[in-house]
Amino acid sequence: MPVVMKKFLRVIKPIAIVVVAVFIAILMVKSRPQLEARSVETPPPLVKVQSISLSTVEVTVTAHGNVTAKHRVELSARVTGTILWRSPAFETGAMVSAGAPLLKLDPTDYQLALAEGRQALASAKLSLADARALRQTARIEEASAAVDAAEARIDRAERDLANTEIKRRSTPS
Image 1 (tube, rainbow, N blue to C red):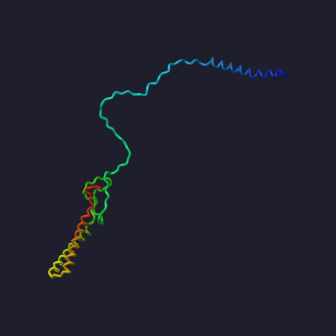
Image 2: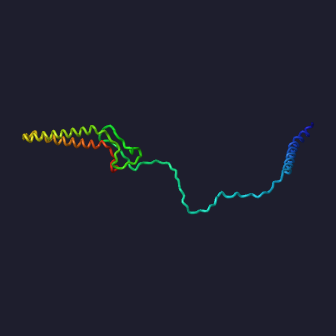
Image 3: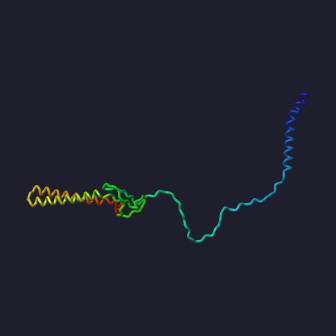
């Protein structure tokens, strides 16, 4: 093939490809089906209309939180001993009225101390009476001090015996 012909084919091939492509595109556009014109419908609003009237409605609220007590009671015994009785109301979070007994401790040791104190008082009073009868000044002072000490032991024994019943105080601190 001559050179001129080769040049001519080089130019014509791309032009022929473009012409064929345009022809195919026109054919495709003309052969497509026609679209029907439709009206665009507006969707209804997402609102519900309701008549209102006055009525009673029960409201339930579910909430999470921490509950704290209005009063906090710290319990401590002034005497030691074995717990013999515990109040049924003595539970965590329970309502306990003022002055209500909560625990009872074994009073045996404190009853014995009270009896011993009374015996010591009687013995001291006898010694004092003896010393007065004999008019012994030194023994009178000693016996008088023994009477005072025995009365103090009785007071302490009575207080300890009363403390074997643990109660809620009347005024929270």
